[in-house]
Image (cartoon, rainbow, N blue to C red; front, side, top):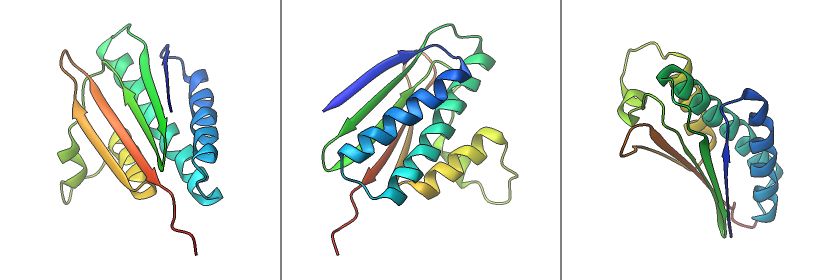
Length: 134
């Protein structure tokens, strides 16, 4: 199952996306700790997308796609100034706010993928799989 929505770059919508992602994580039967991690990760990624849109002066809405099956996958697509995954792996650099948010996100999820979008912007995809049953 996949849910997609397009939202204006208004920070009041971060909570809505965080709530939808948490509900999807529950439906995917993730643990409470994983659900909390998804909340934080999605908040960081959506806030970064909004900031990127504002910096670029893009009027397009941010697209969020939430998919669930044996894992939860949240993709956030913006038309901002773009981000490169390599920036997360540069040793000895002081992270700026967007980079710090992505570093936090990468620590919370099983997989984080960042790709440049054709026509400008980025697609940030975070993935969290169910924890194996004990």
